[in-house]
Image (cartoon, rainbow, N blue to C red):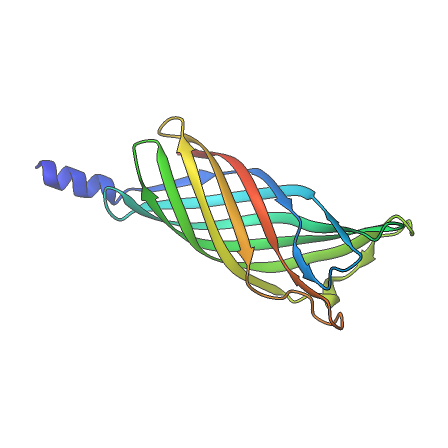
Length: 184
């Protein structure tokens, strides 16, 4: 009876939401003469937590991310901003009652890319200059305040050059995300 209840409990599926903030700088080449600055935007979405065992869960997610990179050459400043719909499949390991570690792949679908700058007063559409998908890995941890409320931090490491046609310019998305979530 105890074994059956433990197995049934570990197979639990729960739905949650986790809005937060992404802090990004990107990783780009060439970077001679350019200073990177931090860009902050929204990051978060919806998740399913699927119990596989007492300490192991899968967590598929659908997220919306606003990330970017601010570039400064000493005279002019430009900000390249991206908006993505992301899908991630994370493996989650409980290391103690309140702390989980997670990691897994993520694919992003570009919905919007624009540049604003200090030398013009207009937003320039750059969506055609960047690839429609981004692929990378997510690593992170979460702290559970209760059975429903948690705080998480994660790092996204883009593996793919998202710059489409910018001669020698290579840009990979990289960002930290901090979220507060609720699981029903």
